[in-house]
Figure 1 (cartoon, protein in one colour):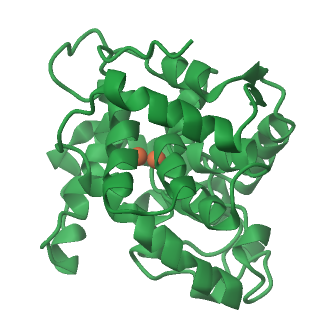
Figure 2 (cartoon, rainbow, N blue to C red):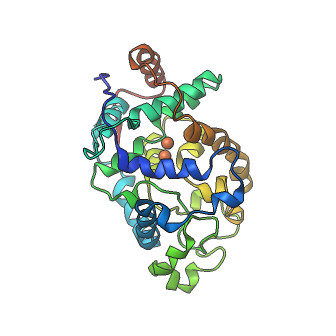
Length: 284
Ligand SMILES: [Fe+2]
Ligand SMILES: [Fe+2]
């Protein structure tokens, strides 16, 4: 195991992450974040069109049932990291970061700032749920900002105009402020659009502390952790725990472009760290 390769760029999936990073560039005003033109990046626009069209209550419940039983096999986190790196876009062999490099840049930045070891490990694992792509899920069901389904769409979600085509937008009980949820019911009861956040949370929740659950499960929930939306669905505990989502987000967004981690040097530390929290193999 543990011979992670560094030479497998995954351009297309990264496109979304890069788009988010541009949106939330340090020093950019709120106004500028919202000022993207659909023509500026047709790939991203088409991605959000499909995402907002297809992420319905039924779809999310179906995916939670499909993956919630963790029946995709027993694998180590190294197996999955290596597996994730096999997603290659041959059309663009240049210098884009591999998924593994993004994971290690995130975790190394967290480590350098002296955060607890479980947070370092969380940084390393936060995007491993993208293996959903390798299970055959379309990108719009793996990446992208997440948002609650079954209630009104916030205008803090990117490209909100695309929701008009979502079948749920025609269901009146899904379009009130709280929709199918009780006010302040807590996010655990709220179904977010399906993607890599919820999946990695399901896989790791037995092993990592609750702060880590929040970081993993809500790291793409930009409408809430950046936009401040959906407070009416959160309970007090969520509001308190969101400090951890906020703490985590800059490492996800701004660690790209830092020094390329030297895998040979850092792997022994990460092997020990993973062994402290996880058995050799876990259910995916
Ligand atoms: Fe992510
Ligand atoms: Fe990430």
